[in-house]
Image 1 (cartoon, rainbow, N blue to C red):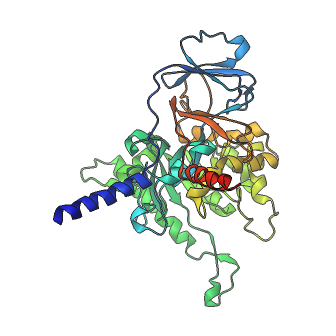
Image 2: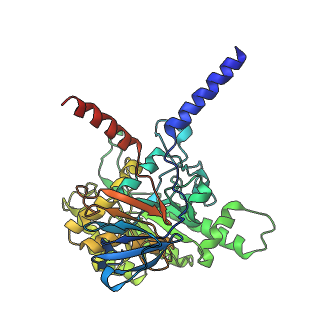
Image 3: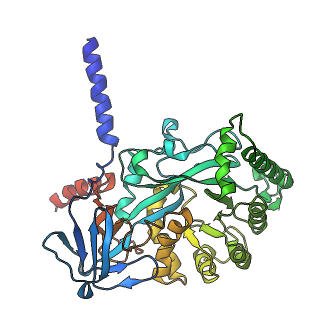
Length: 436
């Protein structure tokens, strides 16, 4: 009976593993291949019609018009993509994919840590490569992302990963390259459930909260300029902000908060700064441009927050910032953000419907986030010498009606595009077709 119980337990665990594990990661590229005839969207604003892209050892070795780029094709596999479109893999900025699987299951939630100041918390070691949510990104061309912790005043340190790996070590592209801050809100809303006026009012603790953050930075800087005889993990994690090796991401939406956050970062000697959310950044384009501040723009498909905002306020923000010469990428944070990350290309498509060109919109989820995260030497655009992280789509990848992936690759490795959703679709398609 005891052995039978053990067997049943093992069988149960095996069923769980088989039921929840994602597709096996793609095998390392063994043979050169060429994608021929597609419209190639480079990711930097350039488009090459009837292109050829040759991939060897996981990198792009040739890209250009097919007619002007002769190749010896007998030694490589040929993918005929005439009439199709090729894009660089899309990149999720400020994402939490892999940190939570089921919101209602506490054991699967590694989103945040207790405490106010947690710069030493590393999101990468909590990243779950077996996530079924991550698996569902790939059929829309979302192949890379930033893993960002939440909570506290200083949330922790983010890393950049690719979405087809056995474990977090294999997934990591750039580890511990950014620290994330939640800037104090300069305004708050009254608690209507306590009978307070629900309108906006100044946050009376704002100055105090900013000073606490400033004091923490000052202490960290003093520690890192000292002998460090007594180790201090949080302050050690902050050192990269002062020597320029780490990026500072500040979550802030209102105009005053954005101005104060930028001035704060400058006063602390931080050279790499991105404003995240940035709801009212469109009112500060000159200021942001002057200070060379980039922006992760809040989810495009969201409602306007203020009574006097236009109904399409969130749709138009990207164009306003891009026209001002600010480096902008899109981010999906908010309600159901992990599941909604698969809609990243359609957020970009909406910005194209509201003023940007399709290629400018594409840059918001390819070249621009790669530049901001510091991975543009290998990812974000289709160029010779860069990683072959790309996909082939039937049509316009920014349009949900035509973005139907045929093939996808990360570092030249062919990916499975099967997911839990595609399995169910095939299952029920057979059922209903058999009834006709």
